[in-house]
Image (spheres, rainbow, N blue to C red):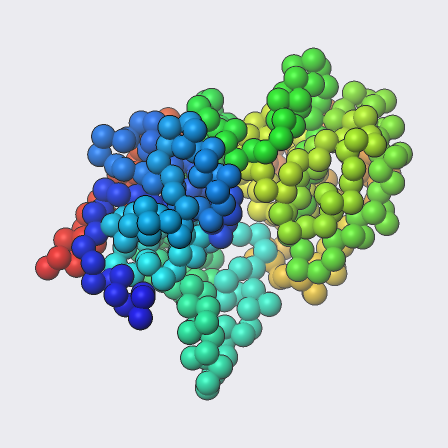
Length: 396
């Protein structure tokens, strides 16, 4: 009933309402587009951040941005007046129940490597029939949404998103992700949403000649604790110190990995909070270690070495999630499954040309859009025209 009534109210297409990651974090593509609109396009766009997290709201207001708690009077009013909604998972990053009537822009959160949406092995319940079909749609309606626009950074991802979310292809816009802006220039207030002082510490180390090795594993539907069966953190710490390296670990917010690593016990290991925005850290990363996370696609923009620590490849693809591509063909870097081979490849990766040809080849094969200074303005202009058109059609 609330959703239906929200659709009866007039909306203003120039009021852009942003949210991310279930309303808990200030991160992802919505964060960077919000900052850019606030700093450069505020004459024609009124950007408002909506969050369920009071700390995020307070921090944004402290820096002069417009932000409200979702269930405050101002938050609800902004949601009802906002004609353009921008998020990176679903409208429930803001709140599904007030979304009816708005132009919905799903900025998404990565060129998919692992299967997502209706293609995901763990989403078979989406195909339920009979009474279950209607029960799921009533209780979890945002899983069945269609969006006015979805964003993907490469042409090869259009067919994937169209199939995974049952979206018409003409609703999928190909452009660089806003969150990669930091790869080409500094962004004011980018550290909002980065709790702790780890970024400044790592930046200081890097300026002093220490190479930063970032370990960013993907989210696993099953336990990721096998990592500790392979890696002895005390030995790893000694290896890092010997070669003047620092390991920064940034795992998924729901991962138990970083909860079991106490960086105070190691001289060369830094644990980044799971809720932190990882993209400022990627700008100061010399070597990325990952596994099945699509984050390496965007890291290819800076063409620095990538190591794929895929110690549970068979288990992951059979028991967690399937992949859209053949793993060995889509990963432009060495694949390792033991600590000895990981040590070896980290040392080799001090040469930035290591696998550089393969990274460039994959970048071109997938037809990635390269980030440049006009990219974000082009995306904003497209969204503005789409929102204006939608509003005119609803008015008629």
